[in-house]
Length: 359
Image (cartoon, rainbow, N blue to C red):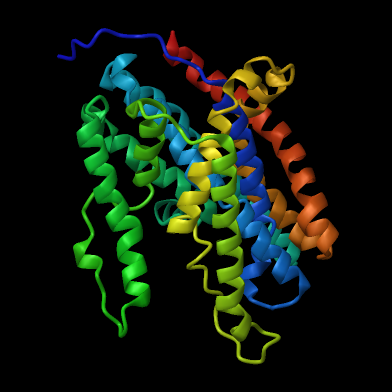
């Protein structure tokens, strides 16, 4: 039986601002996916900038989750934690998958001028293999992290153990891929990865550590901004350098190489960490902001926006000609605006379903 004295949750306004910024950044990332065609034209260069500039989104989502949830034992027991997290996120995944599956089938039917085709078997197969909507990998990843959170939460108040776990996770997530990249030959070092602490869970640990797990004074905002700018410039420069010689227009086409701009890479980790800490440093200013009411509302819609934004992007891809102004500036704004309405309606549906259980 858990006997820890419960404490009320502390709500940080800067996390709502960062959550909204990350939500919009995800939409911008998915509005610049023509980069993977590796054309090498003017839009390709802008896509590289977009992909690197907004790559902080996914790491920050995981860091916000870790900061809020790894120490859950202070607020409620494990049963409550699992019920609260799974009831909302798993239900969102299931309902959104059903809605998106129907919508995508309709889009394909219209685009290819063929009858609508849907089957339960196709849906179940797609759901189990994350083929309903490829960006839903985030839901599967965060649900898996929720399952192991009760184990790792036991180290939440042990700084030494938390730092040790972070070091193991960084070794597996960043050091080994870099070593594989630059060691001559086709040497694979995957057998050296530390099980259960590899990948996105690093950001989950890091978010908690940066907010609750360390008493060290954080770097000044000017230093954070400088480091973020250097990391961003390195991502953009190295990504262009790596790919420019094998784009479509170069005549020596090869698939797009995302090593330097990948969200799970060391440069992106440095950049996202600086963004996270920059938002944290503005908590006092955000406490006094009159815009917080709107930001808080948008923050509650972020899960729904993430769940449905790709449907609108796919619809626009089908009916609206591709232009730089539309693809990279107007389309993200329209998608966020429309999916905010959809997310608001979806939240009403979730509340109607979950309300009887919470009584």
